[in-house]
Length: 122
Image (cartoon, rainbow, N blue to C red; front, top):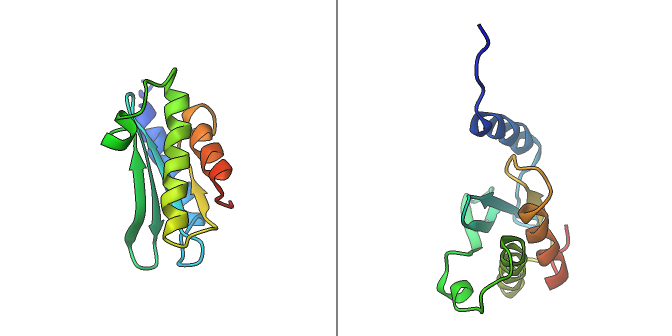
């Protein structure tokens, strides 16, 4: 009998493989991105200390206060710029990008491009 493998379990397997090689340090923290069906979340994490340095998402009042975005991809790029600006204010310039098991296209790619445009180095 063939077993049904869910998309979520496949993504979590990819996430574990990626997380084995990507570690955020104090000098190069990890930019972790999570994508739900409605929102996108990005946070810069120092794994050595186990704490989040900065975070941004489409769920925040600052993002919702903007004029309506033409697409979710545009909103994701804005979140990337926002998290990059906050990280630069905290003194973080270089990061490691963690796509969290998602494919690198669409909204995930838009977050990374927005962060690069705002001044973060990958």
